[in-house]
Structures are given as C-alpha cells and as structure tokens.
Image (cartoon, rainbow, N blue to C red):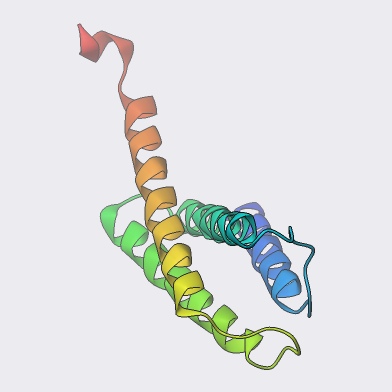
Amino acid sequence: MGYPLWLPLVAWMGLIFCLSAQPDLPHPSNGWLDWLMSSVAHLLLFAVLAILWARALGQGRRSWLTALALTLSYALSDEFHQIFVPGRHADPLDLAFDALGAVSGLAGWVWLRRRISISPKSRS
C-alpha cells in the first residue's frame, strides 16, 4: 500500500469530480447515441475506479469487497454532487451503470489476477 498505488486512484477520483462539475459535457445530438455514450462512460469510469481501489487495497476477497463499497460510495457522492451543478442532475440510472461498471471491473481484475498467478506447470 505504498504511495505510488494511491496516486492514480486519487487522480482518477479527481478526474471524475472534474467531469461531474462541468455544466454541459459535449454529447451527440441523437438521443439514443447520447444515452449509449453516457452509459458506456459511466461503466468505464467506475470500472477503472474499482480496479484502482482494489490495486491500492491489496489482494484478498475482503479488499475487493471494500473496493466495491468505496467505489459505490464515490458513485453515490458523485450523483449527489451533480445536484449542485447547474445543468446537471442526479440520475439513478447513472448510478446503476456506475455499479455495473464497478462490479464488471472488479470481476475482470480478479479473473486477470487469478489467470496471471497460474503457472504454466500447474496447467499440465
């Protein structure tokens, strides 16, 4: 849990905060395409955040659950923050995509960590 592991996490949280503080982000004029891009952005932003939390907290099931709880807490605070930004609003659907991104990111991280830890000799 050294300093370098926490730096990307804090920087990513800062990026999410800055994006949420923008009154109007560029988006396509097509309604469904705008929804799709926004949903994918939420998925990716919070998948990365969950992975960065897991990386900073270390290995183990408890750290992954803690990473998920901290990511979901940040997602909730992000939606709350948007209430106070002109032109923005809190959206439960965004929160759902944040949660889906966090769970997906952690599942991928756990899968990758386990896959890497399997030695070639143990497969034969």
